[in-house]
Length: 273
Length: 213
Picture 1 (spheres, helix red, strand yellow):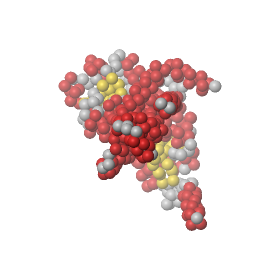
Picture 2: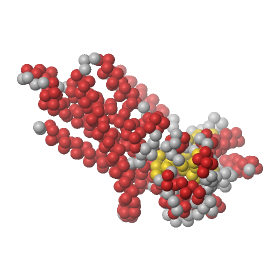
Picture 3: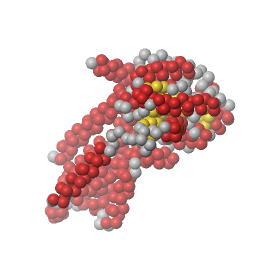
Picture 4: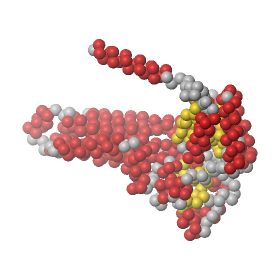
């Protein structure tokens, strides 16, 4: 009985030590350890890794990455609770039901300004200028099918829509402006069937012929893997999702060198464009 | 108070789609529950009659394995075989329901006092008479508790069907996560709880009816 109690005590003390160790961390070089959040998509992961490498190369600080978060609301929640210092986000997310008085627009500059203003004020973050590419949401289908029927735009797809099954992520069907409801209004047609599902499984679905069209992120590498082609959005329905890096204001204000890293990274990318 | 009013507005605007998600959810969950009760309970009863131990071990291990596969992995595995939508969702959830039902029914049947069975034999009961008049009624609390536990699990797991395009309340939850809408997440969760609680009450009533017959 005594030994059991001892064992329990030892375990308890160990647990306390571990929990106590989880407080503020210092990097190997004596700087801070910051945390960057990233969603599931590859381009977001690459962006925060770029940032991590550059911060660790140029400063004494380190960056921990938390990736594969389900979606942007979880990243913003992290900023709110001071768990994240950096993230890679997209301008179009400003229309994701965060703000009541945001004015819907598909103009890239306007969307970016709104994202910088609304998110910046609400979450006390600095929303940097775009990295130079967009990861829009759009609709794609098998290249073979499109070539056979000579379809290139979403308008032309309408002719076949009533025999097509759409696979989409669960949120798109319920979204207001840029979701399925808006799509039906703008393009004036709907698909025979629309099913919400996990994004990763969508690609499998279209690969084995269960689905005919899928909503995709336009820079998803799986478009190449599964030989899909994004249809042209001639009616400018999908809002622009320009990729930007984001940092908590208190980090930028307190550590000038972090701000320098950001401007350096943006300048470097601007030259590569 | 305003939050409450907003929530009422949300319901009044979206009730038809909310109810259709709920309908899909119930269809999937109830199909799975019906199938698994019809399949597993007789299987477990049969297993208590089989003297061959290795066969039982194999069946239990198979059920164990299905229970161990992470749900999302199982759903991904059934896609190439069965496609997307209703059928693969039902199949995957059915495989999950095997173990709790099997274990409970088996334990229930084994809990029947052998002396009662001997007494029934002595009174001239045939095998099926014994099964339906003596063994099953005595084992009923076990069997029913298995069915009730499994039903609650299945209703909660059915939310995952939304990941493979089968719809259901999981659609609302996932849409809420992606679109930053707490009302959707809450409504999906809340309705799943309601379905589970109501079904449990109904099953409790059924149990009472049969227990006294």
